[in-house]
Amino acid sequence: MTIAIHVKDLTRRFGDLVAVDQISFDIEQGEIFGLLGPNGAGKTTTLSMLSTTLEPTSGTATVMGIDISKDQDGVRKAIGIVFQDQSLDEELTAWENMDFHGRLYRIPKEIRLQRIDELLKLVELTDRRKDIVKTFSGGMRRRLEIARGLLHHPAVLFLDEPTLGLDPQTRNHLWEYIETLAREKNITIILTTHYMEEADRLCNRIAIIDHGKIIALDTPARLKDSIGGDVVTIQSTDTARITTVLAAPWINRMETHDSEVILSLKNAEQHLSTIVTRLNEEKIPITSISVHKPTLEDVFLSFTGKTIREQDMNKRDSMRMHFRMMRH
Image (cartoon, rainbow, N blue to C red; front, side, top):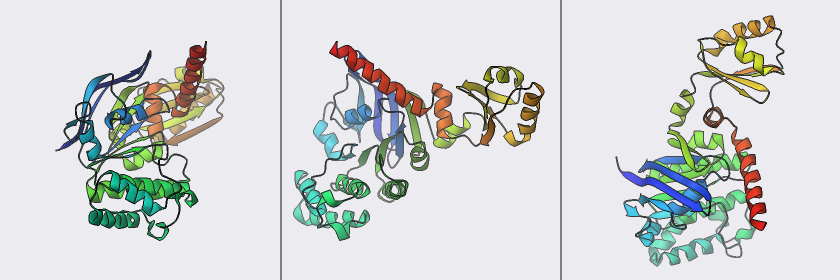
């Protein structure tokens, strides 16, 4: 097993705000590793530190054995980066963007030209190589950015919310590229996302991050298994009594969330009639009841007590309050 990225107690503070709080993890070479969490959880800050664009407050990390604080140039040569904010020159063609990037990395001309052709073919932009980037769709720009990030043959590729704002079809197309890169090129990929489906589909392992801390880290399958079986969601106007009435040894976990009671149990279909019967006997109104296999959304809810969307809202409210206090 070769460790591509090693992180130990990495921390970043902005004044009183602890954006990343003593996180630690290892990523194996060729692995797709996901940082899953709401906006403001610390995902992009983590990537920024690992890519040497932001100094850690404390802690250590190495990328391909290179210390991010002691040899920043060495790290930058070993990595490719695709951040959320587009950095392509819209007035240049696809080919010119690639060529300019290759020159910055001092890739010899013959090798540079060969790689540009190969990568534009990989992301299916050969036919648009001479077109100005401002005529490209969002998905095409994203594919070009990934191709550009691979031009100097990095061992590690950082993808920050790689499919943010793209339509489902384009998102699925990009997922296929990312899977191919890891499988065929043995590139280590670390990506941030707040899309549950994206993390579940792509990642070998996922670190769920919230308030700057890693609260869970495992494979998607094990994270979902940790909930303890199927998930039954009961919507009702009387959730308080449901938790009392349904107390039973075959229910592994029971949580109240707004107007819902969420149960985790094995073989939910076998117990569904018992659940409905007990609630009817107690004259507890049921607005709806549903059964599904655990998702990463259920995992996030289990660990944090909130959905990732609610956490996003709380982060925005917190940031607004922070800026109001700064202005005053």
